[in-house]
Image 1: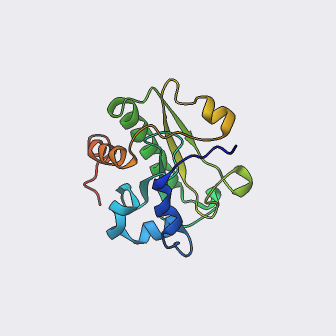
Image 2: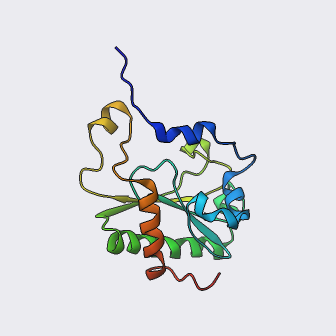
Length: 168
């Protein structure tokens, strides 16, 4: 007998037209699509977008507008700005969203595990007690325990309390 996981929310992914080229550059250049792309924040250097395939609720990424797969070529100003946004994001997730811990990470290159290797990005992943269970460990399957849209709306509401949005 085969196990079947019913996932109707995946139909949008399967049937949706694919973006040609770099998905992060597409988001960077199409500000008018911020809500549908689940962009939480943007300024001159970077944008913050929800991860469509999160490890846990509230998982988002900080992404420079500059298209590069090479951290070494990123201007120091942009790297420092990403780091500043990461600090503020951790505060947002802990104080505002109730996370008990946060993972921060970058997978630089396909061989390092990057799903989108052509454009560097920093993952910000909130963590809670018991957010990994047997289904993750045994079946390599993640269970997303809350509504993605509700998490996006909540984080979008909280963000101005932690990151100034007046500069862009």
